Length: 463
Image 1: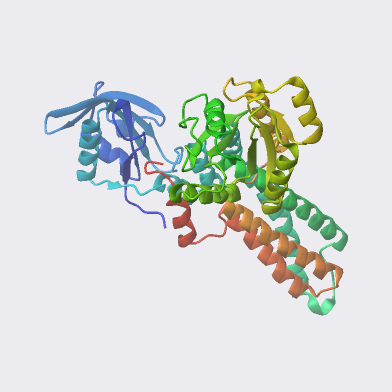
Image 2 (image 1 turned 180 degrees about the vertical axis):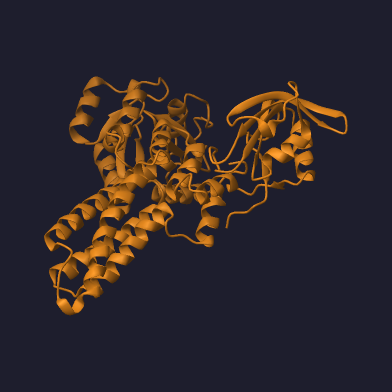
């Protein structure tokens, strides 16, 4: 699959800026760059050492296009494992395009999405899970997702899988050897040690599979729906959480007709807040559509913040509230539900104490005065099990890895069943090979063009 063509792409974000970086990779990178680059020292760049930077100009037919810095990374000591040249030019979009067009005319081809990282994988610089972590690192927008991506890119996840695979492969080899001496009826693989290995593999696989529940929400953000009757302060709460006038606030009931979403990082974890239309009986067609969307968003959310309404005297009908809470719990039994008593500035201390004793899993705030907002944020953070993250354990965030781990666990359980049942070695070897296959799928030791195409298509061009 490794193309011999030299590829080029803009490695920095598109648009104007102070500088831009244009990256080349391939066997002719130095030769092509040398045709356009004139070093101020007069030296030939192809004769320079790897990992050196040179000042000069991009010139064609006597016309100077820009003064640039040219960085050299010779194979195999480069990101892709090939000769790589990076040109740091001024960030004008015109200059960027002029230099790229010159390089294309000299024999380069525009890189496809993720092609630099694909070449790094094909040249053995990264395994597949590390390559996928590169994309996660680029897209990480909070401390937690960044920490997980860095750990995976350094090979934390790959190392765990590779170690298990190597041990299982060793036993598979011994069992295969037994098949060669089937007539002698000998056992080369110690069954007791094999049981211990299967127990250890099963334990690690289950831990990695369980970690996906945390990893998935950290990677994609935790969806939080803000719901309640009209005019209870849902939009005011969203604005208070974001510290920004994101939603329109009005005394007119039913102001929010559509869902409004925005993201906030709390304690390094991303939360995606969804302000929904107020839930009530209405004949307004537009408002009805908004209420329907509210229930759709509750279905998608992991946490539901239910804002309790106040009576005209500043109190709360506890019996009615308990009935409404019960309805939400019955309709969405798997959702984490937190009751928010808003407008606490209008309540008496006796009312607050009374409600605390009657309504569990509740918190008191004043969205308008921004009182209790930090307590709410801390409560939201407590819903996320960050223990594995704090202990720097391996956390699975990739759906493809999760699927392969589930399949590998299923095969390991088949092997254990066969071992306990006295299954012949030749049949047991089939399940072991299948488990090894799924381990290999994660790191890329087993792969195909379609799989690689799907993975690297999601990368940005230039990476």
